Amino acid sequence: MLAFAHETIYDLHSELVRADRATPISRGLLAESAQIVLQDTGEASASARALARQWHEQSVLDPRAAEHTALKLEAELAHAQSRLRDLLARESAIAVQLRALAAETR
Image (cartoon, rainbow, N blue to C red; front, top):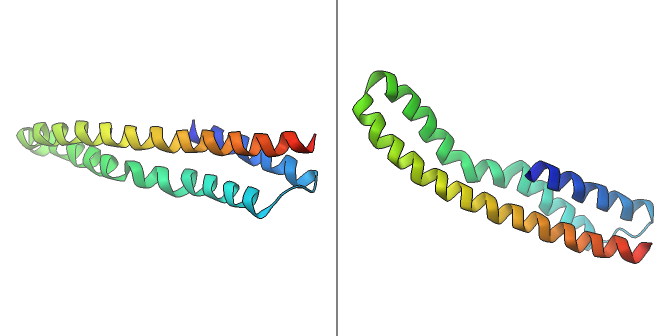
């Protein structure tokens, strides 16, 4: 979903570039969107991915420890999901801003 949002943002910014209406603000919004997709989403889920790897290993070698890790993983997934929702909301806000700028060029 976040990648799709960034693709939309890229298309909107490209429209501004073609109309010679791109500004430092629009370029900054595009850069922020790229950072969200390429960096922030990975950071938001890094702990959950590490716990998932740990759980997978423990499920074979130490099932009792895996149960504890599963609880930590569940909490971390809830946190990551909340952070990803926030990032998607920011992507949506960026798209709204760029749509408004693009509408002004039509």
